[in-house]
Length: 417
Ligand SMILES: Cc1cc2nc3c(=O)[nH]c(=O)nc-3n(C[C@H](O)[C@H](O)[C@H](O)COP(=O)(O)OP(=O)(O)OC[C@H]3O[C@@H](n4cnc5c(N)ncnc54)[C@H](O)[C@@H]3O)c2cc1C
Image 1: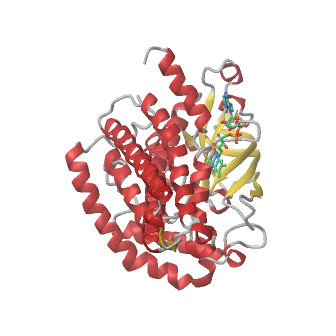
Image 2 (image 1 turned 60 degrees about the vertical axis):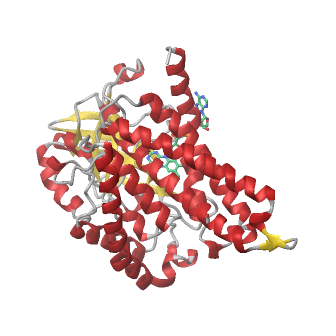
């Protein structure tokens, strides 16, 4: 089993390219026809930080509702769950198509974090994916239909104040309580938790196995209206007025056993499945966003004049654009290789780690260069560059920092890879 093999291995390479092109065209037409007007109708709240964030640091209600409507419209149009396995009611499209469509989406719409276009595809953090294969029938029946219709939104809450890179430092526990479980502990960083209807979370259920770093972790579904659950604070990022990440706690939160996802004590494989798909999303998103910024830099370099000629005529700027083109080319080949191998069910643990080192760091460099070529405009709100920069900077830490990915690469190398 690979880290991201849960995405359906349905498409062969050539089909996936044609499929991705066709889907992307349909998706863009849908976004331009329905989602962009929706975004425009929300007006200033979408771009004015004073309106986008509430006083308590959460996202404005109008934006939360806009996201819900975007998900629902996408579900109606048949896009939202197209990468979810067929047996869960999704479209069952493969990993290569998944990467290509995410890349195309972010290349076209750019800086993705705030725009509604970013919410039209379900991914592990928020929507239905293959991770749900391991849910009980009762849970699937109760949640999946509404989740697939875009009416619910989740959050993937694994990290804790003392457990980031090293998940074995986790302290949240779940103990048996009659026919259910009782959870206690604190989670940190969970993206989209402030607006979530539920969490996919993880707790130690066998301290002995966990202490020996041999399993003992279990995955649970926790509704955010459960007694004992509380959202203790918003983690504000980048000097913003609010944030999408949260600190949350479980104080004797009781859930039935049907809310367990996967076998008792086997939460790590579930977590790997979840973060595996996020990693593939990330490859598409980061390369797409970096291409979006690079295109802007190329266009700007052709028209902006300094010292009697365009920026594009200065050798230094040419070198910057060339370096970015080289890194984009290499990143894309790596990502395509990973996605293709995942599609074919090949073990990609080395490739995923290696590509994440290069792509997370490389796309950040590409983006930063593009901002530099744009001069002061690249840093202004009008250029809308800042969200993409945030996304790429976070990418060097979330879903496994690049230092930890290097650790994995080194392990493979030392084992003779
Ligand atoms: C914006 C954002 C969104 C996030 N979203 C989520 C989410 O939705 N769900 C979730 O569960 N988590 C989420 N995270 C948490 C993320 O996964 C952690 O931040 C990440 O795992 C790193 O953990 P840490 O921040 O505690 O850093 P630490 O683990 O404290 O590490 C600090 C630094 O030391 C380095 N380091 C640590 N160990 C080693 C080592 N052995 N060798 C070399 N270097 C090392 C790290 O790479 C890092 O640079 C998010 C984080 C951010 C910033």
